[in-house]
Image (cartoon, rainbow, N blue to C red; front, side):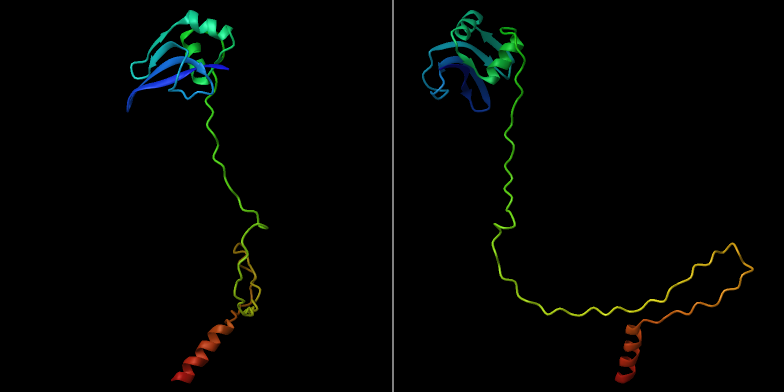
Length: 154
């Protein structure tokens, strides 16, 4: 199958492209059948052989997406521009079943001691005539132990 595509020429950082007709299995820089035009992206100049391009498209030559967009922009063919397709990055996720099994050391569990908390009554301040009983604050058990320890050291 024949393909109409770019063939890059020019120096490094000074790209210049030929639009060539060649077998699609050949590398873009190798043997071509016919040169159909050129494109300079720095000067934005395009030289095309419109009759030969239309002839080869009529003969069944496939146009690459980038060359097709160039031909649409220059008005040689009537078609929609082809969207640029970037390959999506492949994210490799390891399933839990496939994850490597490592032995974890067994750590003794420390029991959690819960301290009782006294309920606190909320009294609205808008009713000053009602007397409330003083709220007794509960001291944490941990604070008492520290006091005993400090007395024992002294």
